[in-house]
Amino acid sequence: MSFDPANLDPIADESVLITGGSSGLGLATARAFVASGAYVTIADIQPPPENAFGDGQHRVNFSLCGVTDSASQTEAFKAAIKFAPSHILDVVALFAAVDDSPNLVDLGSSNGNGPNLDSLSIKCLDVNLKGIYYSTYLALHYLQQPELAPSSQTSGSGNRSTKSLILLSSLGGYLDDSHDSIYSATKYGIRGLFRSIRLRSYNELHVRCNLIAPWVIRTPLTVPLQDFMDKSGMPEGKGLTFATVDAVVDAVGRCAVDENVVGRSIAVMPEGNFDLGDDEEGLWAGAALKKIVQARKDAGNVIV
Ligand SMILES: NC(=O)c1ccc[n+]([C@@H]2O[C@H](COP(=O)([O-])OP(=O)(O)OC[C@H]3O[C@@H](n4cnc5c(N)ncnc54)[C@H](O)[C@@H]3O)[C@@H](O)[C@H]2O)c1
Image (cartoon, rainbow, N blue to C red; front, side):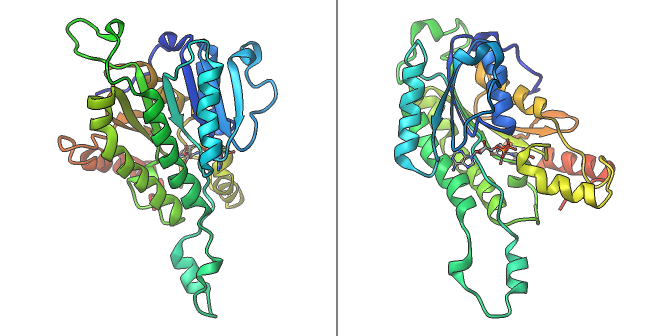
């Protein structure tokens, strides 16, 4: 399946919840959805920047929410349902994450006094995996439509669902990423979560579940990497080529509105967006990954 951008008109007046929507990729997605007329609730530990939505500000609702906290996540979902005039949820996109863990090999090799488990931070595990597990549980509950409304049945195309759940993993959940350990583990974990629900969520709850796996992009999350590149005098495109924020918005937008996109995993690369073929037919993403790795190597990028 090709992954060209979709026209976002169908999202007008829909009700959307975005975790981690106050910064970077989540914020850019929220802005695009609001500009297309959606009602968006942002669930985040920080508010979005003032006036980030211009004329669409009245379509944005902020719910102060730490995704590791079950009560505040539950409140965020309830707030999203209350905020939208339809009082339902149509789209849930899960961006909230941190990236602050070292590689365990560095810790192991630097600790002359012996290991101390109490000094290991597992915040990244909590936010990125426990958080998305909680969010997914709530999303499936509030998005489910065991019986499809007749209006959403397109003639000749079966029971297509307008309800969309979008999980943010990373290319770091497909390739070797030797810069940190927990972040990688959580992004692989999100793939596991995705693969455990994508078929049943569609067949039984009529919720389309898709996964986005971006390559590296300039956002607040990657500032340490950007600083490293700047300090080392590495020109962009040598060592690393960034993909764009807009390409992620395109991929998430497509998953939100295209009823034919079901159970797909989409790589966001500098060259564009690709179906990873993370299924039996695509050799569990192996064939697509081989091409992606080769393209990056040919561009002079460091892969691990
Ligand atoms: N930027 C990249 O290169 C890149 C690449 C691959 C995948 N991703 C993924 O895309 C998603 C968005 O990343 P980004 O680059 O926009 O990062 P970002 O740091 O700009 O945004 C992350 C947002 O998550 C929020 N957040 C952090 N902890 C939270 C918590 N406990 N509860 C609720 N919200 C919390 C932050 O406040 C922030 O608004 C993440 O899942 C990230 O792993 C990013």
